[in-house]
Image 1: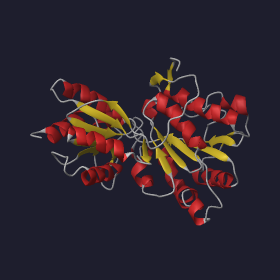
Image 2: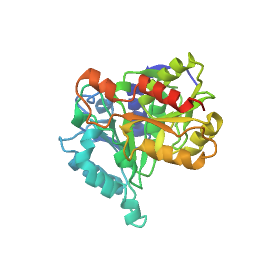
Image 3: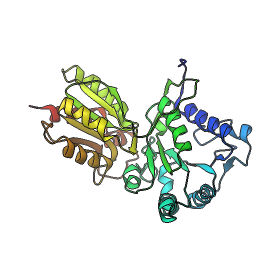
Image 4: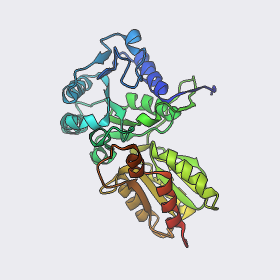
Length: 328
């Protein structure tokens, strides 16, 4: 495939624009997505190309426009709903969880809901407690939906195209702190399938499993630990639903130790679910229990230094890997 480097946000824009050109049933709606080109300039130029009937500025009413989009999906359209922040999705929890995720099951297969909910998840940089929710643990518990968390520009485009084409509701979790990062995105058509984790770094001493933005800190930690003679293997889970536990298990059976890095709070988290499954399938392979790194169990601080200390970071990951591999 051709070599081309673009920003993460432009990869998202390309994915939506290409799918909208190919399928007139696809449309985008949300706050400031049209005339303002998106709160984070992800939908830049889309209003000019597709017009106000397919790129729709909505009122500040997540419950209202989410419910409208779900109704449109049930009637055969394929909406993309942008939440300026996944924190704001909480006011729309009833329609997106009680209707979108359950409608196919409750209607006996008569009404599907091919809809994508996407936006920024987690701490974006001094946005305070109410604008920094990591919703993966809240929403991954609900059957009937899929959840994707792309780390780089390549996955952002390929996974969003997969999400738009999927006949199930997809929760697509981005990070504001990744939008300006750049990466290789081919000009040619491609998609990234759900349920296929990726080995981001090969290693023999410890498996580190993570999703999304925390993978950046995992890479930094692996570089630091390599200086100490600890070779870490990094697994990018990519999707939480479906979860590729097989790739994770295969890595742990090779390294015999595991650290899970999850930006959600620890209690009842995605990280705890993965750790539970690793213990189940790798009980005889593990030289130590699965160590976990999470955000601290407090509301997200506003102060920059406290926010960085609160989140999973390089120091915490290094400490967890050292503890997991000690005397292993």
